[in-house]
Image (cartoon, rainbow, N blue to C red; front, side, top):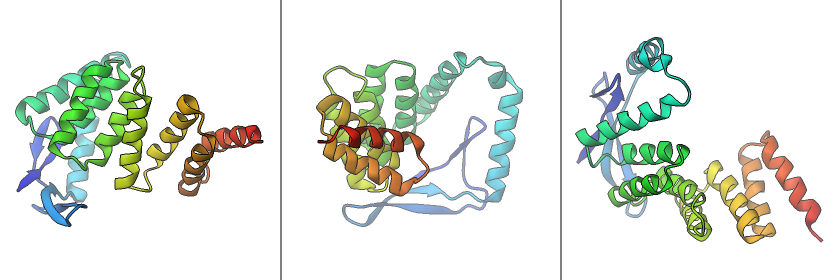
Length: 203
């Protein structure tokens, strides 16, 4: 069974305590992978690595340069482990933020081929598709799949509400998702503002 290790300091490492946790397939209740289970010692190592990176070359990079470095690092991770679904998903997210939507889409698709029920890959796929002209229906479908797998996914509720409003004018369903956002995060001022504007437009 596949066991994913921590990626700390540009290296794959097992948990300091040697522990791992099972990842359960919600469709059949069976484990399909294991993840390294970190503890305080792993956190200390990760924080120290982050501090070294911030004080070193990474910290010297500009805001524009950092996504380029992140893309290079994630591509190197995939060179070492091509079937690492999380790296495909994260690379898709970074590429999407960099405006490379079609390349981002390919990595999201790769992540979902490896793990069809990977919640964050479906969510990231939705975020990629919503930026591609003519793909709003597909984006909405990915957000809905995210919510099927994780009904309390705040980002999927919020982004689906925006798609429903901006692309389809489905106010009633959008309101349901905005209300879900506020149940999960009552202090979300953006959701409150959008919800108040939508409700003001209702007959």
